[in-house]
Image (cartoon, helix red, strand yellow):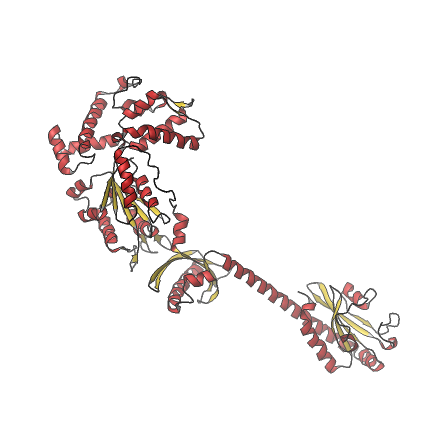
Length: 591
């Protein structure tokens, strides 16, 4: 911006001068060197190009100093026939150390020349003040232009941001808000809703400004019969104790950033030719289309989470979050806050801004409660209430929040037996087991072992950058005859181990882990090598393996998951106590 942009203002200045004094005044811009405004003879020459090469104006622009020329006969004015009456006073308009233009007062008649010469000193004082006025006006306009530009840029940034943004003052004034925030806060639809939300936002802004830290909060409200759940992040503006930037997003945006969606379509990693597993595939395809609670039963390592993810990825919630909670892996004292979340200040050490629980994170998606049999009784009651009412209460909160969650639970324990012991709620069991799916252990689907071996070889060829083409026939037969107490997980670990140590393109028997070689409870095939190290096993280990084989065979009569009544029948036949049965089975799980 330069003096050319102030033409209307400068016209008023020269007109005011002409109304008081019978002298001529003109204002000339520096770059480009151009007459902007003028009075009398100068008025007709405004915006015209002049020959400034030897002018006094150019001299002032170059020196930056005022100039008074009483006798101009050496440089006659080109448009007058009376050069002896032409006297001029010139004053630079300076801003930021540079000459922006020049104000010129001139005489064209003897009377005008007399006035100019008599009032030279006062006229120079007037020109000084006028030049300062014009400089101040130019600086003001430049600052206003800069502010407008910055505001336009800020507005552009505000509108370009994907989330909702507000700039709020400490006293609750909304200085700027983008369209996304207006839509999320229902500004144009419901002023009452917006007012309530604004009160909450202002409260968080105050906390953030007092502590000069970033604050986070959830906003929940209803509008038009629909529940809106938003997340609010308030960040103080640097070096500003009065304003804060507020970012508002739908809660689903938070879910998208911290939850990995399973976009793989059905079937998901179910490698099988076993009739039970093929039937399970069909069941999964059926039950995945609704939101009935599902209970998965199976030993550790059978792939319960894979099945849960398959159900989620095959159903209508596939684009929503899949959240996992391992009830056995989280300390009992932390499990409640992990599941339900808590408000800020709910207890000593509570995180500033509170914590979002897994139920809330899984809203509109699927929550997988793994090892549900290890959940403490007091939490079972709270989970039952959520399954019944579809509402959660965060620790320290005074209100309930509705959630829409598909529950899939899993366990490797006999829940019916835990009910008899008083360790699991019967009402929760029936609520969870609307649909019960049993996953057979690997020893009951040995025909799948070659398929799984090929699958894991291909998987770890990519992961380990190897080029293994297969496995020796004897090694494969050996692995098919192994008991696999760790099921598919143990088989996968075995193949990964072998591929790390294999130097040829075919997996060999020598690279089977020694633990598996020593623990093989099946008879080798006719062309399979004998398991080395058998003579190193103790009698206790041999007896333990034999006992486990017998118990496993007995359990298989009851689909591998006998009830307490059936366990008592097994113990009666074998002449052992129920406690001995559990001790021997649990000992096998530790191997």
